[in-house]
Length: 221
Image 1: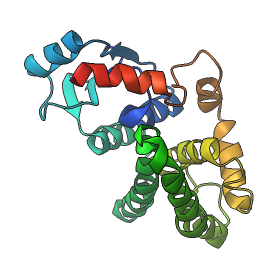
Image 2: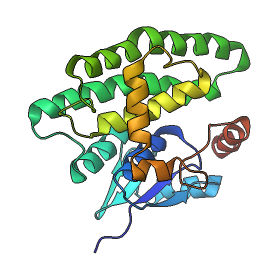
Image 3: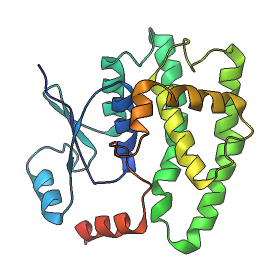
Image 4: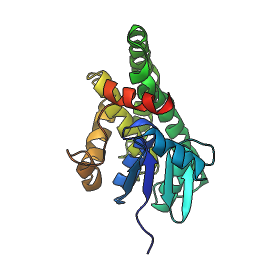
């Protein structure tokens, strides 16, 4: 029997958090090997584990996978979260790419200097409320089904709900005008595996704070 996936990353959200969400939603237990010191970082870069000298990296099924989208796609395929045919997968990928565009803004938001944060926060709010959230609201309303594609849970639903949580941390009213997104968030959050992941003490990481940023900086200085 294959062992648990092992996630190699810093002890924070970053680009690994979507992978954690997907594994958790699929009911997959996983281990984490945190990069906590400069020595840890130098060791993993030099031992041949990282194809492009960067993380996230996930050990799974005898492979050492890097690149967030490649990892997510493998997990989604393995756990039947990637649609039933090429057309469904194309739609799922299209939605996930939109999610990733906005989520990237939330990932890098904490590292912006104070003088820039206000502007970046305004950009996130504007793009969420006027570009991305209306688009996903329209999709859900157009077919009246519980999930974005094929009326079945996919990686697109899981990653969109992760994004909703991330944006709401910055703007609590972010989805107040989007009833379909509110319903999707509730639906996904009540799935037993996701509900467990959202509880305190899970492997879900807290919002990135100044301490986390400073600790990460030390590894590269």
